Length: 557
Image (cartoon, rainbow, N blue to C red; front, side, top):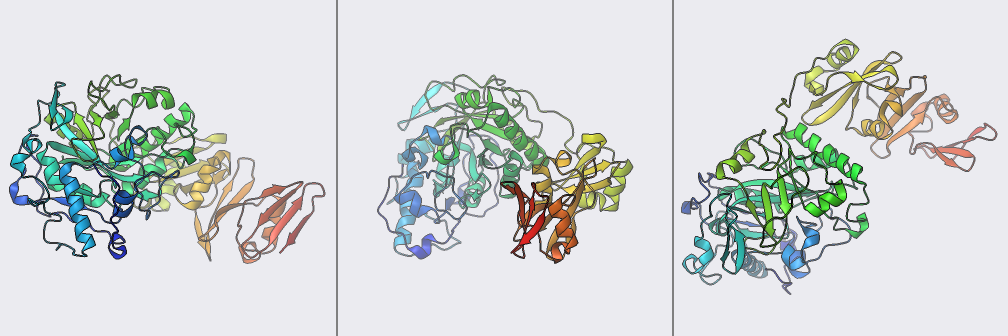
């Protein structure tokens, strides 16, 4: 276990990001008790960028971290453990950390072709003298208990999870102690990606573990879909290679005082909608549902104990020596149990409840049935939907599948007698709309303009698209028209973002008559009220004002 140290790491070294592993081809063990191939050597992952914070002053701030911060942010079970447990390392990985510190102090970098932090007799006992190094994994699914090396573990298939708080991990030693799978923190919210992820993800793979990535959710900060995209874009994807676990959504007690109460100040319906948004987007991007990490208490408190997600594998947290306890509603048992934050493995220690064949199925099959839940829908992820009529015409005229991807919904009814259909290409969503007044047009949901349209209520807010998104000098725009004929123009520039001109209103008409963006510039704000006046600011320094009392429009600069 790491305790705060007084080591002063060289600034030039701590600023660098080092990730070393052996690069021999990875071959997964055929059984959970198969020994590590000795020809692979000692596989160690190292990340020096976070060492200074992790080693000298480990603490969680009041607000989430951002990429580039040395603080690794929250981990699974953060509110349930101390910082000593958050920074937990097994004795073998602790020895590696001490070795790295010595190397940094002497500014002696190891050669990239050699094993990093190779363990020597001076830094730890030999494997023969370490009783945990020869322990094999107990019968799969068994709940009998055993005491080993002063740490408790349930019998079964062992695993672990790590984050940037474990800047050095001796993966060979963790494997020898019995770990056969690992979850590695990749991202948090939409502002933090772990510098340790790449080396930890490859390090666990290179010793033969089945591994996956996890995302620490901040549901009040951005949408579930946005966080799923961020997660997938930064290592959280899945492939049916038999060695990659589904991405894990870590949804639990809020550890940051700046984000409100334990449920992030969100109601139970809001939380359930957020989880569904994350799950739906993750499935769109990867072809399968994410696993869910939580506690039974948090699930009851913050979701109302919903059963709607029991098609997802369950990773339950319960730190004790008596069993995982009661399950959240919908699951009769867990897939993975996080039973300890203090060993026997680095980070947190976990147990898979099923057999080795079932664990391999969890890694390889998009139709994996959770051990205590329902099987996911067998509907094809890329189910074919027909695209026809006005929507089909605009879809094909503007690029078809090559630009917009495949239809992921049938054509459906929209507001005010309109129609819409959704498409996805490489995880990016677009929506085609049709209305008798506007005809059919496409909206790029994830562009700045499309996001403005979505945030303001879609067709119920700005109306139906009456043009495609178009580029103009300095920016872009797209027009929208309501069923009653009121036109809005959403305009974007790199410096102003997207703002809306109400072309039917007094300010919009005044701006249009004076040359549109060529006159006063692009809108810097939407319209906003000041007393009995409405104002809107523009990029060339002008503010157009309208008085509701006099119906007078004027401009100031």
